[in-house]
Amino acid sequence: MTTTDDMTTTATKRAVRIGVGGPVGSGKTMLVRRIIEALQSTIRIGVVTNDIYTKEDAEFLTKLGILPQSHILGVETGGCPHSAIRDDVSMNLAAIDELTHQCGDELDLILVESGGDNLTAMFSPDLADKTIYVIDVAQGDKIPRKGGPGLTYSDLLIINKISLAPFVGANLNVMERDAKALRGDGSTIFSDLGDGRGIEEISRWILEQLN
Ligand SMILES: Nc1nc2c(ncn2[C@@H]2O[C@H](COP(=O)(O)OP(=O)(O)OP(=O)(O)O)[C@@H](O)[C@H]2O)c(=O)[nH]1
Ligand SMILES: [Mg+2]
Image 1 (cartoon, rainbow, N blue to C red):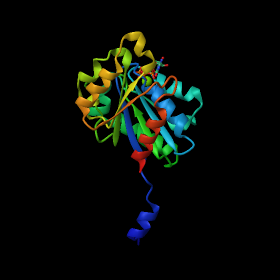
Image 2 (image 1 turned 180 degrees about the horizontal axis):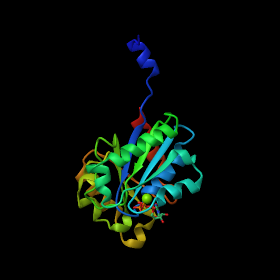
Image 3 (image 1 turned 30 degrees about the horizontal axis):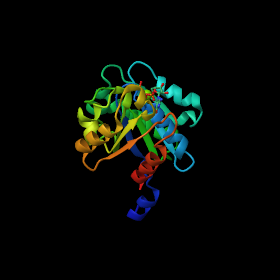
């Protein structure tokens, strides 16, 4: 007979799943890369990437050699990327199962990168325990006041590519003010994942989600 104690000791702890969403090219894959580089010696990380017509992001991360190939899985969603993370998440859940199995049930964190999408994208709670939404300054400093579920309700908003702000006339103070107005106490971090600014703060935030 199996006692409750036995079940407690043999149960495998489920990896925390963090969804990474945001518009095309805002820096989602760069974020995944930087998180892996910063935290792979501390925690065991797996990645599921969504692309519409390719597995390009998964191939890019695999070629970097920063994680074993078995820890990275690409999903080709076809059609509308937000449907695969919000409406019918079965493809992603199957990918998470496969990834978990491939990694011997030993992951602490699974990052699920959405295909690049518009401001209406949001992860289903069936797929992601926590969500990060990535925008970049090159899309204009107006973006944080445009609203939408990712900008408003994500657990962490990342405003990326701040090194480009002077070149595109983006005012970071305006972005900070509008993000605060939209999100209240919701976390917002400014970053440049190209040169590494913000990654320490982001890593701390990630580790807090695992506790
Ligand atoms: N200068 C600068 N470039 C960046 C930064 N972050 C990402 N990039 C570049 O922006 C481009 C797009 O970055 P990705 O990480 O591929 O963006 P993505 O959001 O994953 O794109 P999709 O998956 O296609 O939606 C790449 O050429 C990156 O090298 C940044 O902080 N600063
Ligand atoms: Mg990407």
